[in-house]
Length: 121
Image (tube, rainbow, N blue to C red):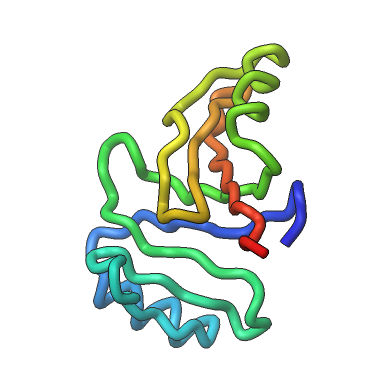
């Protein structure tokens, strides 16, 4: 994936099993929990590229959220504020090679940011 690509979509649900059955039956997604990500069932679309996860629906997280890949979350967060948006969730590590954050655009839409480090040589 490259800078600006939508890399991940999170869908808030109340029942992981029911949602897994629904999206698997509708779109052919294989929804599974990966080791280290228990409680976060993830799916990969049949194209093998796009994917996402199912998250517990809360009052604060009730609409799907797309994540856009950026070269640097920290630089993107500075630019967001310069352009009139605000930081929703500051940069959080996912693992040693990736991180996420969210922003709120000037219209109130929450968008996720995803950063992955270049593999070590």
